[in-house]
Image (cartoon, rainbow, N blue to C red; front, side, top):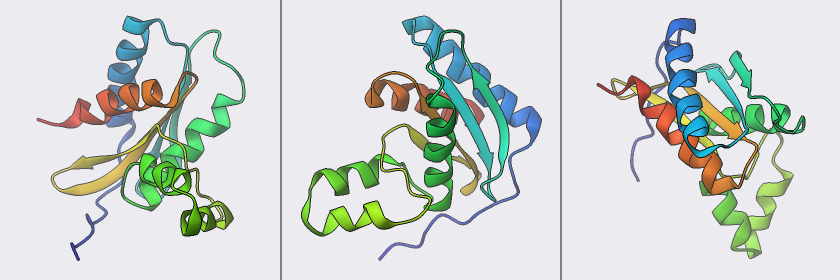
Length: 140
């Protein structure tokens, strides 16, 4: 069994802005209206950015995806895959605070989770593409 990635100091507002700018650029380049949420390593909202014409439901969904990625230190898609597999994977639907939807990615700097990004507004794979771009914004 592998050791989970440790939590680090919370993402700063300056770092969060850089993550959002990179994610926003990815969304704009594809013409995708989305909400981008950044949470810190404690799961607290740091920055929320809703692009024009994004459905309102995505505001809460993006935050839930970010918190899932942060709280479980992994992509929210892991849980989507477990639920899609059925059987015992369906018990995940009973877990409070879990969003089993692709589009949440932990933000890892120097081998530590400093927060996470969640994106909602288009297809889940597209949300994840935007989130991954943002998460990589702080990678040297």
